[in-house]
Image (cartoon, rainbow, N blue to C red; front, side, top):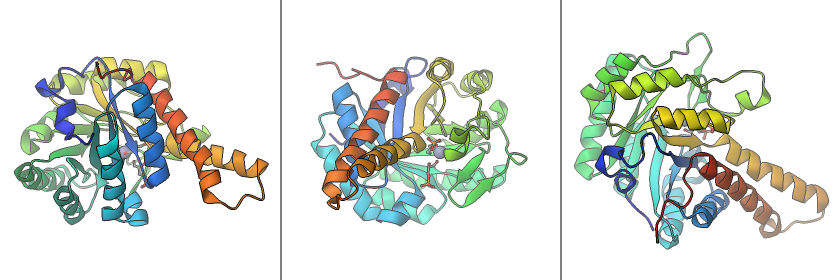
Length: 293
Ligand code: G3H
Ligand code: 13P
Ligand code: ZN
C-alpha cells in the first residue's frame, strides 16, 4: 500500500529511533522498483522508495512516480515515496503536487544562511501541501547531483549547527555528514569511508525529535550500521549496492547466455539481484517483520 512517510514515524519517531532504521532505496526504473518491493514483501516490512534528480532526468518525473505509485498501491506492505537530493526547488514542488509525501532539499553546498533560507521556504510550501521535508546540514564526500565535494572541502556536521538548522527550518527528517561517502568510489577501496558514531550521538542529543538520515551507506559493514542505529539513525539511504546487485546478475546471465536478446529474460536476474541486496539490507537495518499480523 502507498502510505505517507509520516505513517512510518508515529510519536516523533519514538517507535524507530535507537531501535531500527527504515531503508530508503533509490530506484530509477521498473526493474529496480520491482526488486525492492519484492524484498519488502518477503521481509514483511515497510520501505521508502526514493528518486534522485539523475533518476528523474533518466526516466522522467511523472513516469517514475507512476511506476512507483502503481506498484506501491498494489504492494502488501506500506511504501512511502521520497525525492532524494533535490537541488531544483521547482521540480520538488512538482513532485509534491504529483503525490510524493516527502522531498529532500539539498542546498548543503550553499552557505548556512542560504541553506536555511531555501530549506525553510521548501518546508513552508511542503507543509502547506501536507508533505514532509528532509534537509541536509554539513557536506558529504563523493559526487552528489551537480556538486562534487572533494576531501578537502568536506565538512562534517557540527551538532550545534544541526540544532540551529533544525530550529530555523522545521525540517521533518535531517541528513548530516558523519563520514560516509556517496557513490561507487568507496567500494573500490581507494577511499576509506568511516562512520563517526559519536557525532551521530551528539547530533541526536542536539535534535532528539527528528529522524536522522544516513546517506552514502552502501558498503558500510553491518556492525557499524548497528552502532549507527543505536546512536540515532532512523533512515538509511542505499543506492550503489542495489546498482551493483542489478549489474552483477545481468553480467553473469549474459555471460552464460551470450545469444539472448529478449530483455525480459535477462532483466529477471537483474530484478532478483536487486531483491537479494535489498533483503540483506533489511536484515542489517533490523527492519524485518515490522508488520504484525
Ligand atoms: O546520493 C544519491 C544517489 O546515489 C544519486 O545518484 O545522482 O547517480 O542518480 P545519481
Ligand atoms: P550510496 O550510493 O552510497 O548507497 O548512497 C545512497 C544515497 O545516499 C542516496 O541519497
Ligand atoms: Zn544521498
